Length: 210
Image (cartoon, rainbow, N blue to C red; front, side, top):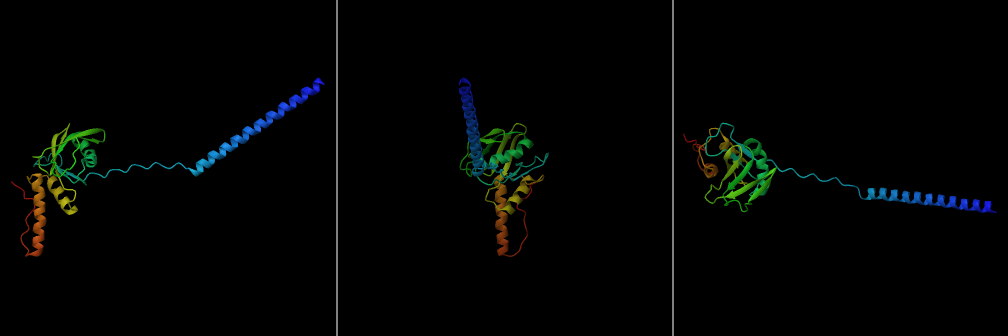
């Protein structure tokens, strides 16, 4: 009698353990199906890569060509220093040393922030009303002060190329930034007049003063 009851109890325990294992296995299979379905329905999307900033449009005098009033020309795409300075310093920092300060005339720059974050550091910005409105002043650790002609963003490609070549030429004219702009505008006016009148002698837009 005791033996029979023991056997019966053992059988019950064995059957209960087997059912529990089956339940756990079924639950685990269901979880796997859910994970597979989630991965199928909601795939991981690749992260978009940040768009690279366009390179600065710049022409500089070569080493040893520190003649004239300017060290080259810069043709920004807008009048927004926050968006334009990073690409400019990316070129100038390796050449002239880290740019620490810049200054402009506020005439053509509607918003001049006090600080502009660029790659690896911050550039302090300032303004002077008596400053040439077409010039950018830059200060760096390695080379002190440099001055660039600022070609207006709306300038056409032909005029911009002409101004950049003249301002960065080794034996370029001794002109101020505003004088460069005025000379090129005068050239365009003279060309328009020559088209409407008789042909005459062509005069250089950028005379070299000896």
